[in-house]
Amino acid sequence: MTAPRVAFFGSPAFALPVLEAIRARFEVTLVVAQPDKPVGRGLKLTPPPVAARAAELGLPLAQPRKLRGNAAFEAQLRDSGAEVAVTCAYGKILPLSVLTVPRFGFLNTHTSLLPAYRGAAPIQWALIRGESVTGTTIMQTDEGMDTGPILLQEPLPIAPEWTSVELADALSSQAARLIVQALASLDALSPTPQDHARATHAPMLVKEDGFVRWADTARQIVNRSRGVAAWPQTTAFLGGARLKLGGLSVTDGQGAPGEVLNVTAGGVTVAAGEAAVLIRTVQPEARKALPAATWAQASGVTRGARLDLWEPPAS
Image (cartoon, rainbow, N blue to C red; front, side, top):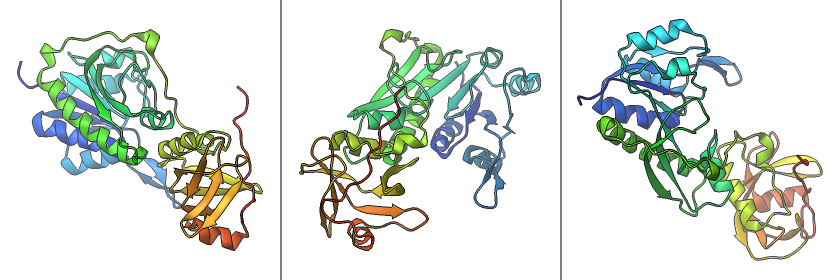
């Protein structure tokens, strides 16, 4: 078949490499992004990165506030002449009335090896759960939450030092390459239904997901810190005051969970449920991040001090 005309649905910076890869090979007839939002202290109305890039390139742009029951948008998508649509971190559920507009439907770039980690935060939860491999799935979008058939899939090993920031960069590049491959062979792809019985889920993060559970193993604490590095970041408590922690790693040590075992120039060592965690930076509320040893000295934190325990509420 000839190269299909493409409508692209995406919003954050993560989606930019995918948009750029598509437009280098195919005609992009419409870009769809979320509406502009207030940003910063001045609450200046700011377009999402994909919308800003589309405007720079002079591509047709739509930013509908809702999709369901939006006949005007459906007509705009139809009139764009797109034969297939691609979604990448768009951030809205697509109703059937929109999914059926392009001739070849919608392809989604999902950052996990489906059916694992369906949902809004697969990158973050793969790290929190300590996975050593993730990947990208190109799937045919249906009305469910990442439940459509798989068209292409490729694994990606996770480097031990990667946080959600580095993993997102790697997966964005992988998704850009795979979606071009899928679009170039659109009529030859064989959809494979997912095994729904094997599905796991990756819900949107909330701020409490960044709270340190000192009763967890040191490895679990560090993995959680890797997963929440972009947001909401790693938060601990001392006397009820919040502290943002950085540069966490597993180290030797034994003590009561949350107990400070040592303070050295290299950082503050805190006991976990198993082994210990070395903390390299601490950022008190409304202040800049400090080397952990500097913070400890200024705060009077010495060996034997206890950071507050926090446990998630019973579900």
